[in-house]
Image (cartoon, rainbow, N blue to C red):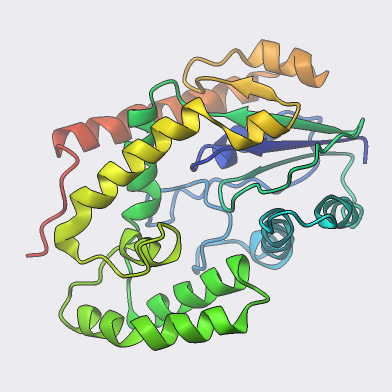
Length: 291
């Protein structure tokens, strides 16, 4: 491995950032993807369980990403960086790029290697980023009861993989209420499960509390823009606004030649962001009707 570029974001932005970089011919890894046929609103999603994901992503990329999440999330684990380095040693690319929009970076030590470059990316407006994140991640529809159970299992596998007691307690305290909501057509979106998983509420929010979780994300995003744990701990190239970023400067930092395919993907990303925001503004960022 000659170079590994790791892109990090507190929201969904790391995956499209990596995919833009992946358009450079120097990159021979295939971690990034863009699925325009996927019915959910994040075309850059790497690990959603669905029938649209190609076999390369499903069988090779996804296991690597799950293991990456498991390694980076434990707090104060002195083995995190050695394990991360060992995981990278299993890869055969010369120049690789990974943008992981899942999981929380909790490694305190600096990841300092001559062949690793770290990038942190965001949008300039934290409110815009919060709106987009809620739309592409929180508003994913829960298409069936089996899909809901699968989502719970994935959460336990990726974020509490060595804690059987957590999973037992999660099911014991919440599964009956979740099934009641689902049967009443009131458990519809990923954000409702996330209030149980990630937001420290330890309960499933009902649909009438959507504005509450929207405000939570706005406040959280504003704090993350001011105090970014990854940027504070790691030596990294910071991109304060992906919508206006200078690809030539980024390539100079990476030691790459700028290629036109990167511009094409950046333009697609910018258009996707603009179109999504227009739709959100037109809908006043309001809950969808269940009629």
